[in-house]
Image (cartoon, rainbow, N blue to C red; front, side, top):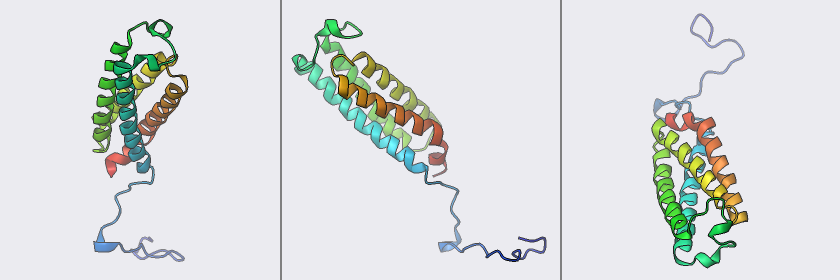
Length: 152
């Protein structure tokens, strides 16, 4: 706009929006946060399944408890996976609210998930590697694009 309040030459007037409401500055990056929340929900379910397998069928894994980074019985690993999975599902729901505290908790839980999967790597190498990669992607989305969700 020029100093007279009229649009400058060669520029079009601002477009009209339905109901006179203009968008709030929400960017397409907010989709990354929704993606991260759904990935966290899925990872939480995956952790729960791994926990149940560890509790009820520990001979399924490639190595015995002596072959793991942390020498703990599979029953303990089962409970760790179950509780971590439940926390991850709750954190995913919190991320969808757009609150900063939920995002920070989600980053810490995703970090914990990556560490648990690193320690569990010998028992389930390919699956643990995939989950670590998804954890890293979730952490990236939450840290880099988290503010966009708050505006949404």
